[in-house]
Image (cartoon, rainbow, N blue to C red; front, side, top):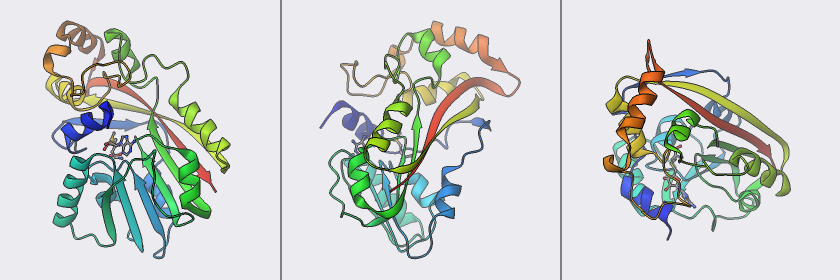
Amino acid sequence: MNKEHDYYNEIKNWDFSDINYSVENLTNWNMYEILNNNVNKDSRILDLGTGGGEKVLKYFPDVKEIIATDFSEEMIKTAIENLNKSNRKNITFRQMDNLKMDTKNEYFDVVVARHTCIDAKQIYNTLKINGLLLVRGVDKLDSWELKRAFGKGQAYNDKKPISLIDYENILDAGFKEVELIPIHIREYYKTKDDLLALLLKTPILFDFSETQNNEQLNMEQINLNILDKYIERNTKENGILLIRRYYGIIARK
Ligand SMILES: C[S@@+](CC[C@H](N)C(=O)[O-])C[C@H]1O[C@@H](n2cnc3c(N)ncnc32)[C@H](O)[C@@H]1O
């Protein structure tokens, strides 16, 4: 497939429980709360780019049917293992590319896309009339001081923030009641190793469109002098500060 696919295939899960960090939420927008408030036991939910199913298994409500998809076969393998260890029912994990969706038309009550790419028109088609789309994404200015210090990273060279691109595409696809919410979060990493573990696992310092390499960053590719200076400037009482910029979108078909 492509570099992004190979990158996630290599990572195999989206579990951060080994990293010691705390979160200070500055925005009152909780996607799972909205999801829970908009379904009932007869609902059908589609989760796009589900990773290892970590969020679906933990936060999604019990409903008639949940289909959770990812283009990485390794992620889906992990998700099925996680499902088998859980006591959740009515959940199917399977491979699908978000940009080549093969789900039925007018089938789902809610489509969720958290930190993954979307094709708004295809989502529109698979939703029932009045169905809900919930998106949460990582915006251009996420971890900006860090990306600026390294001079690279996810969306670093984007002319237009991805939040606006998604918002406009969702409007163009025909959705109504479309709302875009900027989400501000402060994370505090306990130690340098915790911050490094995050940088080695996520694409924060990685730009899929520019890097030749398919694989995750390795230690040699992270300039530790730059990182140490960042840590010096950002060490607070609770740990090493990383300012996160996400966005949420709610839209109705
Ligand atoms: C950052 S992880 C987020 C996982 C999960 N949604 C969560 O919030 O924990 C992004 C996931 O999207 C998947 N992904 C990226 N591009 C995709 C595409 N075009 N089609 C399907 N999955 C994709 C990756 O394989 C990865 O598992």
